[in-house]
Length: 251
Image (cartoon, rainbow, N blue to C red; front, side, top):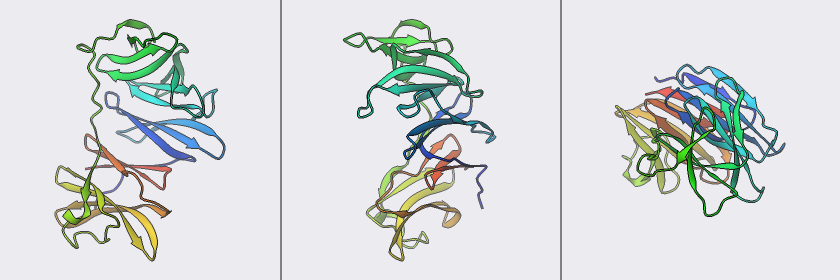
């Protein structure tokens, strides 16, 4: 049977994950809606070492993760509580939580193979700039031919009609029309919802052939179908349990 090599529980809801494949770092955005506080954590995706787990910025709520790249976690603030627009880039060392640099005039646009692409929020129309992630210095204007989008190697499961599953291949009967499904190496990974004694549950199964080699109850006492429960990065299966626990298995 497979076993997680990372099992980390946080005090707040896991809101977003970002992975730095170059350095093997997983950055986590945590949100406590009751206290209106956002915090950040960083883990070594290979060993499970927690670098830090409760970094809070001066803006305690209207902040979030943009990306983590080359050992640097990029954070942002929100312009307004009710809107999605971002402002400011704050670069944090993903191992020490120390601030490396910040720029309150720029906003993050996307990550390219040559580094972060940003723009000055005070200039219209928007002009994209390539910046150095280690210093925050502007390197040059963005060039779509040179600065192609950075591929994160994160694989998201696809939706499959539950009717395509072999009847009786899983211990639980899927509820609803769809399941989340992924093949990797010799494993099949399935996340589904099921009804048990009138309660809606979300489950995760890993199968090798017809044998269930791993199982976990991801969520219970839920009122509606939940989004995909897991992602794959290289050979690491990463999933969230009970909204506040991250587990990682090698498959």
